[in-house]
Amino acid sequence: MAKKTQTESVPKDNFDPYQIVKYPSSTEKSIRQIEFGNKLTFVVDSQAKKPEIKRAIEELFKVKVVKVNIQNSPKGKKLAYVKLSPESLASDVSAELGLI
Image (tube, rainbow, N blue to C red; front, side, top):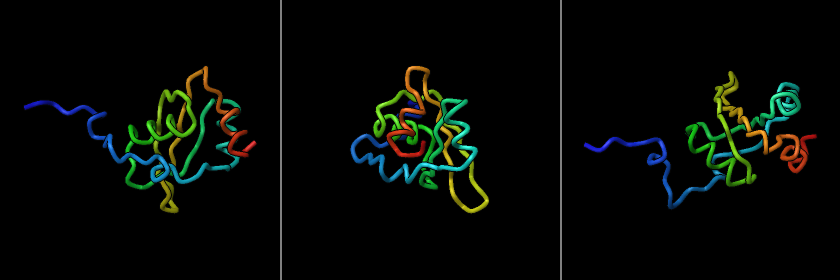
């Protein structure tokens, strides 16, 4: 039996990053993460998995994602903390989004 990898679970043909990433979070914590941790925070679809979120962010903003952390908020939202590589600056992406 062939072993499945994480990348095989992401559908290749009908992948829509706009269905996964809903909107950026602009709380005090997320702004601090942009400035000091090179991280962006997004509210994502509640069914989205880490590899799907990584692929969606890379396609939407043309950046390199190093790591994705997930937090389910008490209000029922799913937050994705996305750490970018050193050559991709979170401050540049947040300026394009109008957060800073």
